[in-house]
Image (cartoon, rainbow, N blue to C red; front, side, top):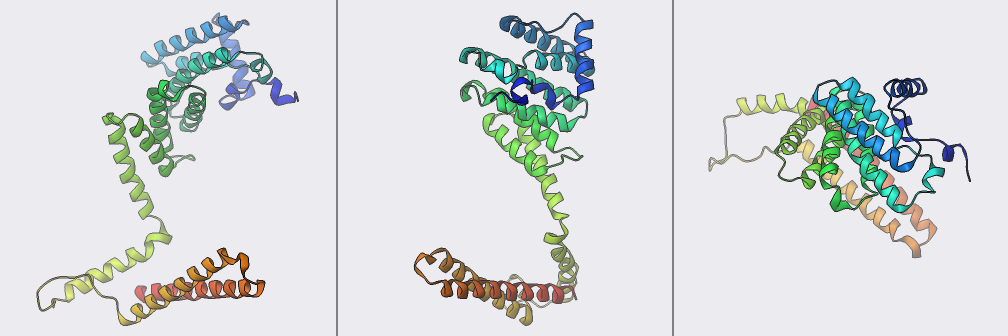
Length: 297
C-alpha cells in the first residue's frame, strides 16, 4: 500500500527535527543551494554540496561543513514511492554517493562532540554499503566501523565499549595495515577490561579475597619440601562447597540433556528431570553464596 511512510523522505529524519529541517532548507535557499527536481541534477547537486562540506571541514568550520553535508543528504533523499520508479543503476548511483557523504557526516559529528548522531550516521553509511559490491566499499566500511567505534567508546548515554571493540575489530579486518585502527583497538581493550573490573557482581568477591590472600602470603613462610611454589589450596570447607557445586551442576546438565532428547520419554519423566535440574541449581546457588560468605569473613 501507499501509507504515510511511503510518501515521506526518511534520511534527514534520522538527524533533524522538524524545526531543524526547516532551518536547513531556509539556509539552502538563502545560499542559492536549493534542491533541484530532476534525478541527474540532484545527484550532481549532492556531489557539489559534499565537496563544499569538505572545504569547510578543512577550514575547521564544522558548523558550515555540517550544513552542506546535511544538504547533500536532503538532496539524495527520495520518498519510497519515488524510489520505486528508479532503475537499479540509479539506486546504485544514489548509494555510491550517499556512502561517502555519511562517512563525512560521521566525522563532522565526532568533531562537534555529537557522538549519538555520529553513531547514527555511521550506521546509515554501513546500510548504504550493503547495497553495493563488497569489494568496492572496503575502505569506506573500514572508516565507518572505525568512526562508529570511536563514537561508541565516548562517555555519554551511548557509551558501549563492547560495541566499540566489535567495530574496531571489523575495521582492523578490513584494513589490517592501519596502525591507527590497531592502536585504538588496543586502547579500547584496556579500557574495556578496566570497566569490566568495576562490575560489582563479577569482581567484588575477587577484590575482597585479594587482601586476605596477601595477608596469608606474608604470614606463611613455609613452602613445600622441594621448595617449589604451587597454587594455594582451598580450605577444607570451601573444597566441600566446590564438590557440591560440581555435582549439582553435573546433575543439572544431565537433566537438561535428557529433557532436550525427551521426544520419546513420558511426561512424568520430563517432570522428574525438571525437578532434578531446578533442585540441583538451587543447591549449587546456595553453596556458592555460603562459600562467598565464608571467603568474605
